[in-house]
Image 1 (tube, rainbow, N blue to C red):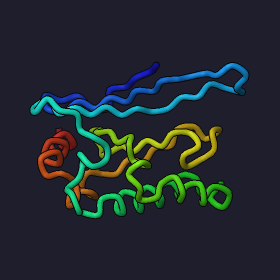
Image 2: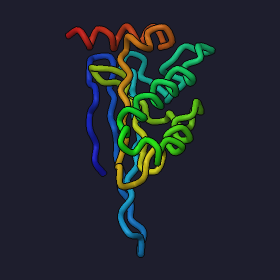
Image 3: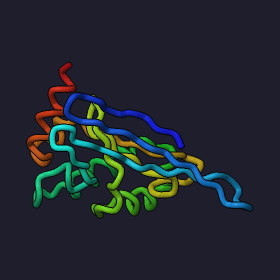
Length: 151
C-alpha cells in the first residue's frame, strides 16, 4: 500500500491511500484509491461526496460537468476513442465521486483505472479550484480550505 498526505492542517487531514492487489494469472497488478478526509475539530470522517457540499446544491452536476470537460481536455489526442468512457465514469452519480481529497490548490477528484480511461492511462485526476465550487461547498469546510490557498 502506498499513501500520500494531500493536506494536513490543524483542522483537516486528507490522505490518499492506494492499495495494490494481484490475482494469480492476471496480466498485471491492480491498484485503487481510497480517500480519507478527517475533520480534526469535530473528530469525524468527512464522507465523499456528500460531506463536502451543501445539501440540495446540485453539487454532483457541477463537479461532473467540470470533471468531464477537464478530462476531455487532458485526453484531447484520444478524445474520440475514450469520450464515452469519460462521460460514463464521470456522470453525476455519487458512486463516481467517492475519492475526493482536499489539497492546497483545490478539491482533488481521483478516478481509478478503467473508470474514465483505459488501464494504460493510469489514475486520472481533476482538481477543481475552491473558488469554482465556493457556492456549493459546505461553508465551514470552504472557510478552512480557502485560507490554506492563501498561506
